Length: 114
Length: 107
Image 1 (cartoon, each protein chain N blue to C red):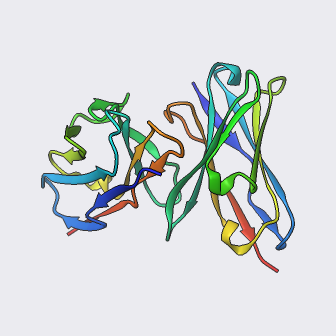
Image 2 (tube, rainbow over the protein chains, first blue to last red):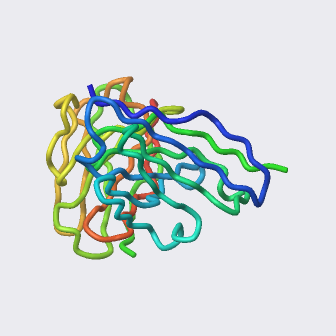
Image 3 (cartoon, each protein chain N blue to C red):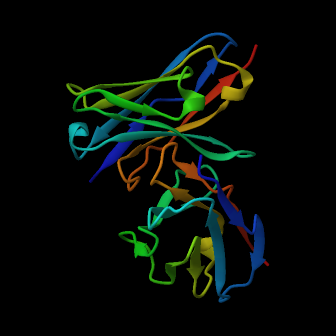
């Protein structure tokens, strides 16, 4: 069974950074792209970008180009997303999703507050 | 960026009703259109891909269709478990873009 297990909720100060993880089981992450999606109830879903864990190639939505950094560790079958220079606008739930978005992580809540 | 205009933003319907949600694409997206269901506190679930293909495990009362640049998700007979927010997604051009969502509630 394909599963994506994300890291737990995070509370950060404005200006700091956070690194979220997404551990895959039931398949090898090198076989599929991994997408990241932002969800805020008042804004709906936003696509952040994807990483190809096989070679580290990434693609970002322009608005997240300087905000998010996607990486992957094939030895642990885990994808990561680092968010930098956090502001209140980054308060959201972040999801990882496999390739054609047929499998999703449970989401990781990030709260940015002073 | 391709804009996905989704309508309605919310709707209420009764059990057994036929419900249709629509997304209009600002550019040609072919059949690169998926539909997702999201319940409160849960991850999105892919319901339809390729505009008309039912995802694995999705009940047959769900269907997708296309007419030109208009894409529709139809629930043929609404059940209580279908109450959720539904989003469309275009995946032909970067950045991928979602519709704003349709909140489906029980009347």
